[in-house]
Image 1 (cartoon, rainbow, N blue to C red):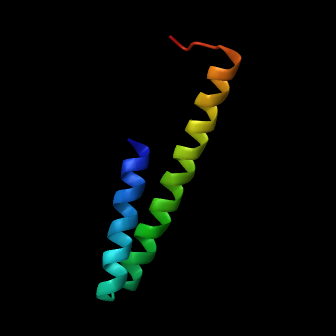
Image 2 (spheres, rainbow, N blue to C red):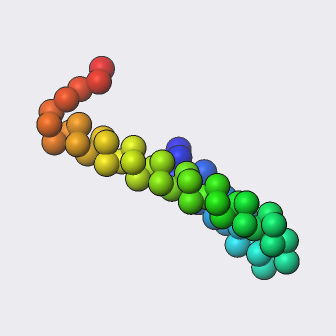
Length: 57
């Protein structure tokens, strides 16, 4: 879910940048970067849980 939002904001940033909306493109790119980092952190956390055999349920 987080990765989908990151990709969506990345696409918005590309389109806004191509159309000349520099402020909107920068904002969308920043949001995409933040969401991508959140995705990476959650992914690494879940891999570590799997490796150590820890179940959260």
